[in-house]
Amino acid sequence: MTDFNNLSETEIQALIDNAEKALKEKQSSKRKEVIAQIKELAASIGMGVELVEADKKVERKTGKVAAKYRNPADGSQTWTGRGLAPKWMQDLLAAGRNKSEFEIN
Image (cartoon, rainbow, N blue to C red; front, side, top):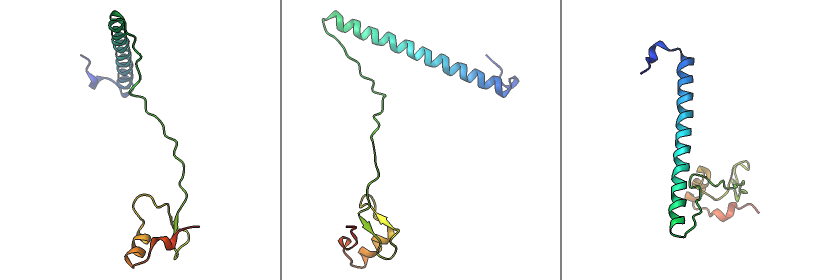
């Protein structure tokens, strides 16, 4: 066991980096072994297997949504109509106004 108190910060960081690299290599090797076993078992009963990565995240393209409402008192304040209404809209609605009055045409 290594006495970390006698190592410099650079030496400790190098140990961490090497350990992380070794862990990733072991995980990758184990993964390849398991995949090979799955394919072998499937082939033994005359089946084929296609494995799909579950970890991969699908990136959604999100664009800006155009503003749908504008504050009549301050034209720089707008709201898309999505999510929680801004304070200025809540105040206008509480005063009995209809949100369709503030739609941007």
